[in-house]
Length: 289
Ligand code: NAD
Image (spheres, rainbow, N blue to C red):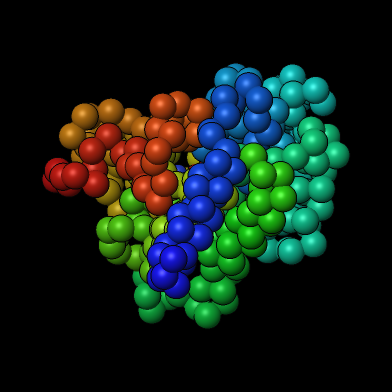
């Protein structure tokens, strides 16, 4: 038998062995999720949806009191535990995963959702703004994904990592260079990690929301008021204003983003990885003025 033929056979034997080891996606009722920033807004809605579908959930947030309240609401220690974590800290991220393993025996679904939004014009954006925004969203989600991968590869059960990115990952909007740049960074993390972790049965996808006003702390922290002032409307009218700009004429709520996370992790999208799903009522397809 020729050397090249031997190599070919060995290669395919290795590939087949890999395929045999490849874990199939498991139902949410058998899974353990860790959601960052789950004390509020989109993260909270996502934690709630995953728990409703049967997953055990680790509610991880910088705001420990909010995380506690959400975990309690989801059914307490048998279903959900709260951990206080700052995603800029490697040690705290490690502790959050340790807490998940202690409480539920592992983690096989991670949602990178924690975030802040520093939205300023270029000339007002300081180096400190840039660093803070990137520390939390670009570096923070990288650190969370790295720990997630470490745990998931060890478990050999496959898993999911989902990034709550943004329409801003793809489209430029004025006056938020720091925020949008971190979202573009996250979008590329999705593709890079999908490529690197696929052979372990770990899928990595993103969700790109836009215009989630009600229930979002990011909007409450002055952003909504500034936007409303720009458009010359009341802040309470912002939801309807955004809806009006969409193809579907629908307001996007945190629950709609959570639906997409469910579709990616517990629904039928079992062969999807490296993708971003827009949840924006059509804004990414056509911007109506
Ligand atoms: P939110 O303010 O309601 O929730 C963000 C959560 O992240 C908060 O609970 C906050 O305490 C937590 N957090 C902030 N810094 C943290 C840190 N260092 N470590 C751990 N947790 C931290 O906002 P939201 O609108 O629900 O946003 C959630 C995600 O969705 C963000 O990544 C945001 O960029 C993204 N997003 C939101 C919108 C929108 O329209 N609201 C649109 C696109 C993307």
